[in-house]
Length: 184
Image (cartoon, rainbow, N blue to C red; front, side):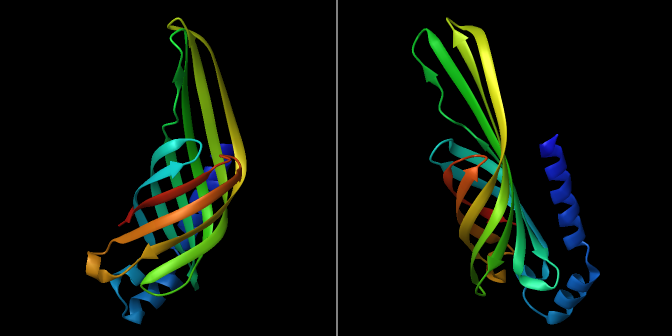
């Protein structure tokens, strides 16, 4: 239930920011490069976390109206945590996260950024004894993010942006991770 409410709130906020006609008019008349004119960027990314290992996901960057240095970064990451097997007992684990972060950007072509955010993490595990399912558990938690990263912008790359980010999660996912990817 909480996850659904959070997702809806993020979607409504993002739609409001992207639909602001003042932003489109101001950017369209500025005469800048295509990376500055676009208000929404989407793309794939990958992550590596100290707890959940490798993760694959999708990300969106939304420009905030009337604040060229602010952006809303939303992401979904599915991780592949290690399981364990002793021959008799096997544990398989799953972990995914939804993040919504506010980022303050510096610079022009290379844009470092920092900011806070929210994190919803879901972990589950299944236990098997002698190959037969014998139990499962799951946990969903809300937490906070502290992040910093850099984006590479510019029209010389065919309208793509590249990003690299480090994020520390307090509660929720409770891990440190690094992410990288491309936005279109």
